[in-house]
Length: 117
Length: 115
Image (cartoon, rainbow over all chains, first blue to last red; front, side, top):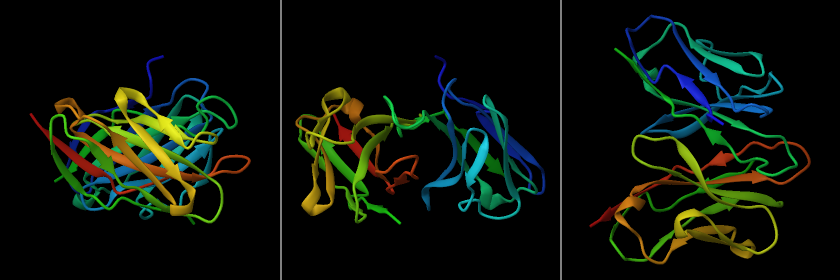
């Protein structure tokens, strides 16, 4: 399996621009997570989906952030408009259903390093 | 809601030294516990996990962790570290119940191993 795939790996944009991050989870995984990692705040859960349905978006910082999962193999995290304080590494992770082998273990993608100037 | 504390933010060791990273959690019920590792410039990877049974869990690369329920702890250990163990280590906790429960990560401990 190719693992969780994220694109782009690096994104540099200017303040006010729209940014779209993409994620392809591991095939067969029912759960998908979006995290943000910064030096100041560590690893924060933004939102997670189960069977393509958003379950908990309480970590989404504000209305500028939105996430979708139109099908089991694709999710996007959009920031519009972007601000310098959004600069971070954004990770996508997926997880198989519980119970079962590997349940609740999260498999992380390589991350997208976002820089907003 | 559960929480995780990692008291050591930055640890520096020489090669061959023994390692112990502290992790304490706060939750009144049964939990699942995890240690993840993030090598420089890479994504998080599972190091080991505890779901039930033997509280001493062995993971990859010679790491182990011990779940002490009475102390709400899940400390990570390695008898002899290598330079390649330089990474950031995250402890995580999830309530144990039917269905999915959110995993909460600690703030991480950066380990630097000096050759």
